[in-house]
Length: 152
Image (cartoon, rainbow, N blue to C red):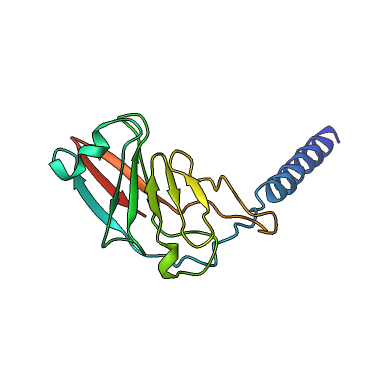
């Protein structure tokens, strides 16, 4: 009779764990940016080339055209970590004015004068009526032997 209660107790514990795992593994809904399409990127830059001199210094940035939607802005965070951002404003449909321009450590959209931090990708001056502001679209970076690979 004691074996029956042990098995029953074990079954209850297993059932409890299954229920706990099921509810704790529920995925949060990720809101996709409706303004920017997903574009496949796999691009390498040689940081030794003179055209990328601005990326040799902390806080330096460079806009690379012909990849992404409107290009990609690469930012030197700390000489070992580089960030790559889509060079399109994340908070409205693509227009000519939504091509971001680099202003120091910020990227600026000429449509609404939105400014984004190149260190975090965060919109730093949202309008009061802007619901759910989006940050810059991030691309993965990998640095190896002064070759920076940008991909997604």
